[in-house]
Amino acid sequence: MGSDAGLSMRGSVASVDKTKGTTMQDWLWMTAADVGRGIGAGTIDPIDLTETYLAAINAHPLSHRIYTVVTHDRARSEAKASSMRAKSGQRRGPLDGVPVSWKDLIDSAGITTQAGTRLMDGRVPDTDADVLVAGTAAGLVCLGKTHLSEIAFSGLGYNPQMETPPCVNDADAVPGGSSSGAAASVAFGLAAAAVGSDTGGSVRIPSAWNDLVGLKTTHGRITLNGVVPLCLTFDTIGPLCRSVEDAGLMLAALEGTKPADMTGLSLQGRRFAILDTIAMDDLRDGPRDAFNTAVDRIKAAGGTVDHIEIRDLHAAFAMAGPLFCADAYGWWKDHVEAAPEKMFPQILERVRAGRDVLAADYVAHWIKLREIREMYAHATSGFDAVICPTAPILPPNLARLNSDPDYYRVENLLALRNTRIGNLMGLASLTLPTPTPSCGIMLNGPAGSEENLLRLGGGVATALA
Image (cartoon, rainbow, N blue to C red; front, side):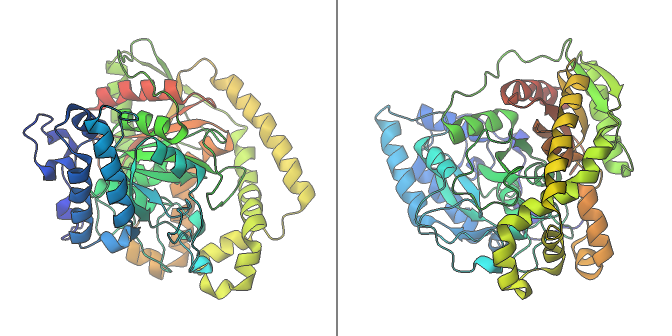
């Protein structure tokens, strides 16, 4: 795999010293939970921590491809307030003072937010999105906004209109999308955690390809007010993190709730189902081998693994194009048709595909999809989680994506194929890194099961370590 000067700044989370002897550079690679514990113990000051992150961002040769804007003043103000709370014993939660990044479709007051598209050049919202308000109330420090696929409508992270962030494992490949900069900010040590969105896989693909934990929340669980939409009926907000514990803490911070209990995790007696329908088709060697190894470790840790088929998923996938594209075009059509020349042709083609979807067909598809969701829930009710490779492919080559439109279409659809199951079925979904770089394993659970899924994911992560 390729490498460059930017990739050399990546560190190993597993090698971090969690004692008082850690240096400021160590802080860049600690989990958000460990950083929060350091703040609570008084060994890390949020002001010093934030300055360390800002300095790393300013010095990194690829930061312009990761961040759309770095909010120095806001970060320093929030860090100062957090430091005062820590010293007075009034911390707002376990992540109070932890610096994070925000995907550039989440509104931030007085800061450009343009969803990765030239269609929104100069757009500056007056208020923060509700989820940013919640995160700020929990004490998260906003480092800035991160790049994404144009209007969040691609799983590759390739955005020739703005910037394409780097992949931490391959300098010649794309990082996954659409939350591409979000993943890169964490993987390159330029944020302790990140907030992204997931409509068809946009949190989980970049998490998998950059060896992170990514949580797709249940649609409607986290408010979308103030978030530039792609598909309002599928959009979700979720964190990209270094650990399952971080994902649980971030979820709680983003919605103002109590985090999941992550003690006493075990896979003994837990039941997993490998979804053979669609998800296991045409796997490339790396993801297939990594998944098989992960399954062996789950079994060794006491989990049972069965295989299931859910044939109705084929009908759901046949409706996915009209459902996603019609939803996207419904919101974006005025922007798109006012200046189509500003868009990357591949994204323009995808969003315009919704132009000719009949209203009657759209409604009929939703009626059928709800029926299939009920069938899926019944077929999987006896299992703790349904598992499959997060993506059937490794990160595609950036230069070839730029020169070969057919390659772009094929790789983009394959990248999002497995993750899309969770969006179509309305599930909670968690991706975990395996020991093989850029190869994740995905756990799908019922709607609203995030806490159980996180506990299960914690056990799987231990088995894979």
